[in-house]
Amino acid sequence: MNKQDTPFQSLNTMKISIKKAVQSRISNLDFNNLDFGRIFSDHMFEMKYHDGKWQSAEILPYGPITFEPSMMALHYGQAVFEGMKAYYVDQNTINLFRPKDHHARFNNSAKRLCMPETDELLFIEALEELMKLDHEWVPKKKGQALYIRPVMIATEEYLAAKVSQEYRFFIITSPVGAYYSEGFNPVKLTTSDQYVRAVKGGTGEAKAAGNYGGSFLPALKAQQNGYTQVLWLDANEHKYIEEVGTMNIFFLIGDTLVTPELGGTVLPGITRRSVITLAKEWGINVEERRISIDELFETHHNGSLNEIFGAGTAAVIAPVGLIHHQGQNINLDMEKIGPFAKRMYDAITGIQYGKIEDTHGWTHPVNIKESVYY
Ligand code: COI
Image 1: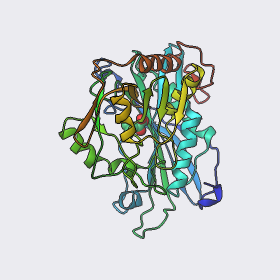
Image 2 (image 1 turned 120 degrees about the vertical axis):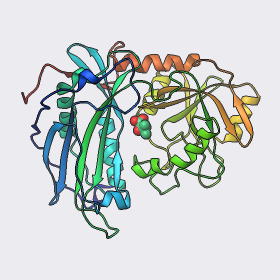
Image 3 (image 1 turned 180 degrees about the horizontal axis):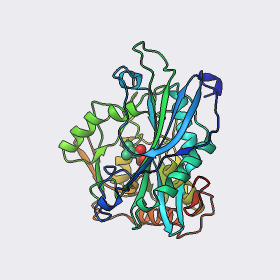
Image 4 (image 1 turned 45 degrees about the vertical axis):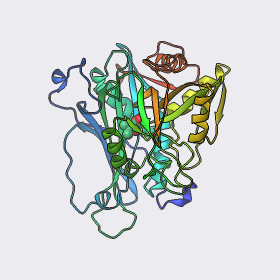
């Protein structure tokens, strides 16, 4: 999408004002018991877009915000978000993982929903300052991280179905453990005969809030039938595998790693991209292409389907043990994660926690002892 496609052009860098929480809530946190996304750290970042530009960038104590019931995001779903993570390295350092790539995707999502872009330098600076203020909230154990949720919503008070002229952008953070209750054990997926996630030309490749809201009913039905999530098929032919909704999907077929191509309906996952890069470096043949559910069943029947796993920021690398489709199962009879997915998990998390050398420039280390603000 070209810059000219949206009516918002003005990016500006600002100084971030900081209002610290009077008292930290961290003593209430049980680091041994981290549910995904239920607890929020002491501070958040916020800025507002009005009169054609972003204004009043500030870090303030995490807490409720007020808005009018006529706020446009509530009526027309003009809302986009990102999911990224920060990792504890040592007492001085927190690693942000691929923050510039997340920011670029955030701007692409904003453009698709006709919302203003944000400035990369300001985005990174806001993250760095949040890490410095709330570094104690970054969990230290393997498998844990500080989940970072940037979100932008349309805030104009107006009921006409038009592009809002006002927005709010927040970044909140949350210490997390595993996303799935299965932890590192294989999850079960099912296709859906009735529902689709995205159509070509729609918003599937954007991280639009509505993409997720629309998937809750099919996901609930899947869960009621004993599956963890839905494996989405394409909307046209209901034949080609797309993604899982909270993660991209990979198949190790023989020695080849196959993943559905992007193409407008699949979220361009940052973890997906990392998996592809590492696998290619390991000399693995990687194919980003259309793969039908029938082809997948065929590979299972002929014995060439070795592993299935999902990849996403929240899910990291999640082994898939079973796929159900129209009364038939691909059952990999797995108790645990497969060797390739385990190797990938160890490599990616090793880089994220600073235990393996980052030769790709994916990590963005934040020295928590250095702040320009206090
Ligand atoms: C992420 O992986 O960060 C996501 O955005 C998935 C989320 C809906 C939990």
